[in-house]
Length: 112
Length: 116
Image 1 (cartoon, each protein chain N blue to C red):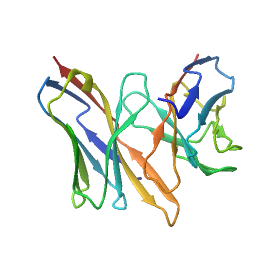
Image 2 (cartoon, helix red, strand yellow):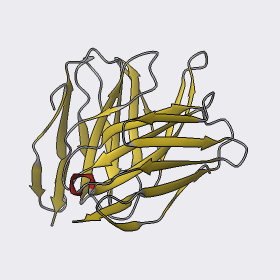
Image 3 (cartoon, helix red, strand yellow):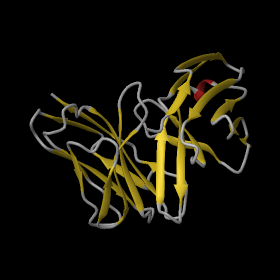
């Protein structure tokens, strides 16, 4: 482990509150990704970023926002507009010119 | 839209037996097929991958086969051990460096249980 870190491991929030999930990598990877994982479903792409100061919506971006001010960091904010935010969130990164994605340890978010 | 179907959703095998997990993809432009192992509450770990110019790849007890014509690929684990128990995910990637296309579609996962 190491290389890509996510914090915290578990996060609890009340409905109606925004919450920011951290993702940091020291692999010098250019691209970073956020996925959501729900039981019985494949990973679904929320946002991705190929370079600093640029990011693109994935398949389920509604209710989420991101920023990419530094190469090492790609924080995800889950806003109150996200209707079903409780899930396991995975961050991934990829080196430019490479095929492989590498995943962080994940953050389990519970909203009640 | 594009999708990846993965079967079976659960698989139980006796220790020492082989396990096979199959995935079918829809995007004919897909050219990269990784397999991930995820233990409970942990990160997916890349265990093997194959590109579309290769039909088969082996790494010790695991192998992946690809049939581009049929658009399906499979993970084979031989001589299974209890520590192989986990959820396995396949993915179909469409990677085009010149256009900057990097798209990954994931299967829904297979829970493998290796019974001692």
